[in-house]
Length: 328
Ligand code: ACO
Image (cartoon, rainbow, N blue to C red; front, side):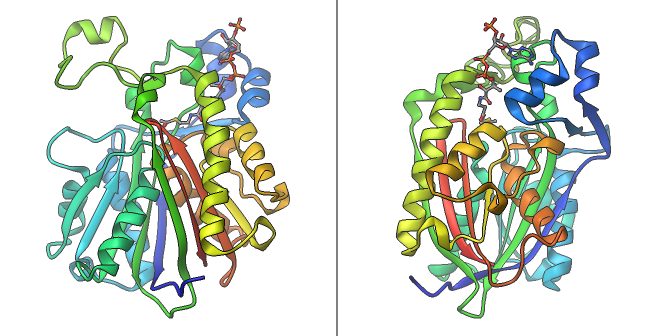
């Protein structure tokens, strides 16, 4: 196992206050609390209010992570943001957050990798730190998925929520930090989970709103099967790269999309559910914010303790997937 060169100096998250429960969906759609809970594990999700922009939520999570790291924003030299729901298409969300927090000495850019975006960003930031391109990085996952969710489509509407999470990555003590990572993509399966309209091929028009192609579309059953297969494989490979087996993992913090995917992933690497952190019941799928939000909650609730071996694993549109092993 390699000595971890970079560690988490600070962690923060932000969740909007407005809550949409399964009972609320029963009034809007042909669905039921029982169906949603049994098929997904979700009970409620938080939805952005007017003031909760993607960059604004990212700013709040970032300031909390920076405060814990004891680092003024001007000390950052790298900002990587992940989002599938930018406030605007130009400039990047990372640049917007850079301006909001006053991190004037940083280089800032986005990574596009849907739900795994924060994990991709973490690995990119770690690689740039290792190459000497930066010394202190901020990696953010921030999502306002409610903006691209079709609330007339029961197969997707109930799944998603809004949130942000951020971490400060810096040189550590050589004991705590990232032990291994594994990333993978398969662009041939893109049509199973995508937003057909709103890009340069189908630019914004009244038609996009009428035919709902502006919104996220998902072939749920196919995505489910691919997620189970890919997350299990990524978890296995990242553990092998770290020279560890599932029994060495103190806490699995998976992407929170569906409790059944989480259970299948844990079972694949022989991790019992009492060593898995789950908050999908309260937030639904918050895409790139999901894992940093879960890490922050795991810590606040006392489940995540210094020195623990933690496995992160994720899957999303692209398809993209990956896993990280770290010592907290
Ligand atoms: N309420 C009631 N019934 C519903 C609902 C709902 N909200 N949604 C779908 N159904 C119905 C379907 O119409 C279907 O009915 P039919 O049999 O009469 O046709 C039936 O339930 C079963 O539908 P499936 O899609 O097969 O249900 P499944 O058990 O696969 O669960 C789900 C659907 C929850 C979407 C699941 O497939 C899933 O979690 N997929 C993966 C999602 C995911 O992990 N995404 C990750 C990436 S997201 C990102 O990157 C942004």
